[in-house]
Length: 186
Image (cartoon, rainbow, N blue to C red; front, side, top):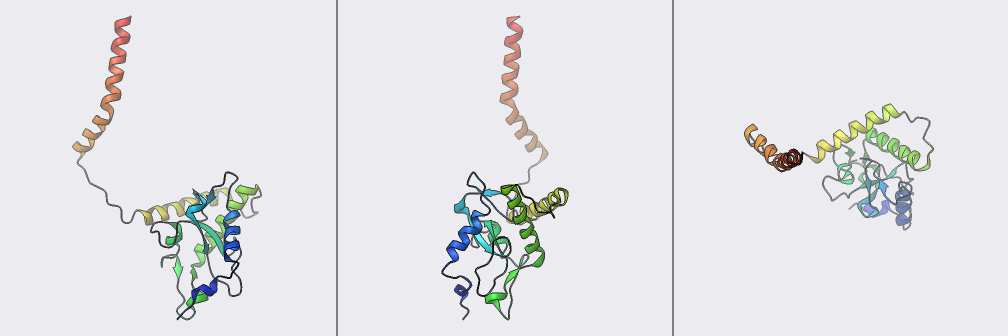
């Protein structure tokens, strides 16, 4: 039986809190290293990109704060543990499980950018155009993943036009009344 608790020392809560602190903005919100959105400290967990024996890890290297939890579908922490983003080592699952290399690179790069936003010191490898493109790709990827189970109701164009008319009826009616009152007062 594998004892996954060996991945965490008695000092883990301090290490985890420090990883979250390093992604905390002056207003107290924490930016997720995956989706780059702000969250309260209650909705953020520390994620291992990979595990290291004898060490809890280092923030920005193999630890990042991400939103949600591994048990909350749709959250970044849950997503980062799915087969598309995470590999399980059959020979050494205790220490060998990890995120895929390209995911590790993106999360580490995002962590550096978050540090730059907080401290004002951007890394020399920071290129705004490339970063914006990467953010767009990550956001698209995450939105697709989060919308997989969502069902949409198809409506006819007539029903759609009727809904638009109903939503505009009151403002248009108020405008007509206002214009009539304005004409009468002249």
